[in-house]
Length: 101
Image (cartoon, rainbow, N blue to C red; front, side, top):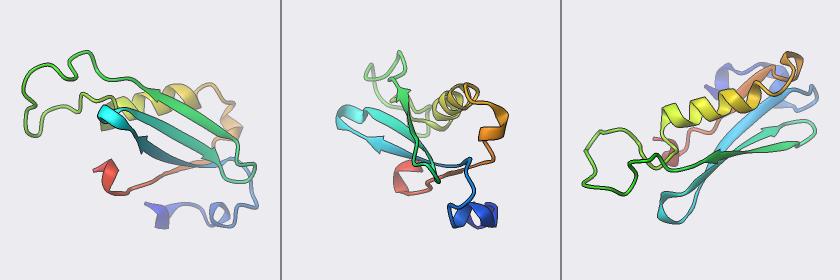
């Protein structure tokens, strides 16, 4: 929750606090963004569709096959953030807008 992030992350004076968001495009394509709040350094997250995307009927409450379901996004964030030294990753606040439902 944004209310639970460290106070130092709110004023952007201390580096190494990140914010994430999702950009949804045509045909359920998606790109994730990770932005370091002090420097505004941005990393893009490639979120390809799952192999089963677009084939057959969609199951209600089934897995998100478009590539931007919770598990797919978590795995991509984890892999991308693992490329950085630990001291560069103090916190990550993820946007919780409607597209993240």
